[in-house]
Length: 422
Image 1: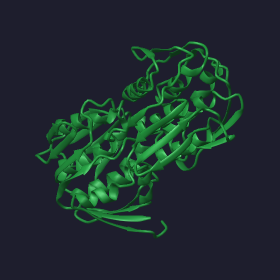
Image 2: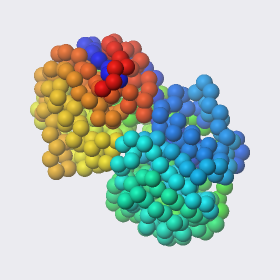
Image 3: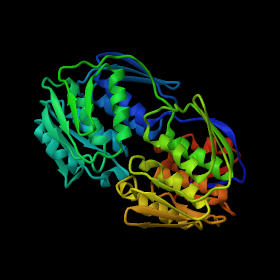
Image 4: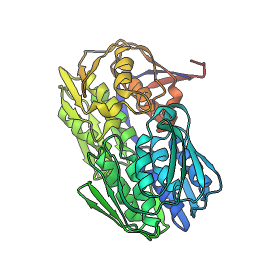
């Protein structure tokens, strides 16, 4: 599928898409809660749909209608295999949950997920009593429990998603547990996990993100939940306002623990006019200057920030770019290749993305590299492009933001999507 994106003046108001990070965590909690939970989740992206299929395979009864998901929880696997689609969070989060079972369960996926690393799960789950086999450090993963709890050392330097999985699974085992971790990245995502657990009446003690104490024998309590707006997807819309006019995004909780709320700090550093009013954020274009920003704890906003930096005077630097290598694509590389193909000047050196601002982009054609955030970055970059930007493989946006094209058009853009194979 190809999409031809063009927009000259950005103006409009949209509602933020639901946070897929929040939706997937709520679904995991609802699986482990005996009883009926209700989740208001808005439109569902591919990753959230994958999480629904996983909890069904692990025993939940699920009905989704008109943006609301009703889950009758109870962990009682009905399948020996769960398919996580291309969701990195669901795969690493649900492997420890699957390890609660006393039977072997195969966790698999498709596309780019089959190339992402899973070796970090083997030793920790082994310490907790599970048998684990990876496919040379990749999916499919076979896991057999049950987890018994206890002390465990887990590497958090590459991703926090597996730590989230341990935090979700260990409260229901008999023994108390302590998770020891160092160099934990993406700490705000752990904050989101802890917040979600608290909503299910689960208690975890966090000792400076180095030790997590989890009392065993706890019970998840069902309830009614609402997924907050997604700062990751909204970042593209806010950047479009900063470089091309004015955008207003509603449904964003200002004191959210989502890591990508940090996009506001970057926008202000660049000189954009940023106003917040309750759950609404308004960004208006001003003269933009280069900025330096650390994306270590918020790597998902690197693509929109690279677009923002391209519209700034001078040289901008995004630090912590090593976090981008093991995403849906090698995102450090594909940000450079995609944006440079339409006239940007982006390079990757050491642990930094270096972006030299340009007066305008030439436009043209680029693949999305099967990466939803690259596809949206290319569309956002059309704001400062002399010619339209043609995105090959645009359908990958469904992974996180299926309504992106509709919102792009609401802001004054033109998006022509064709089903021609690429």
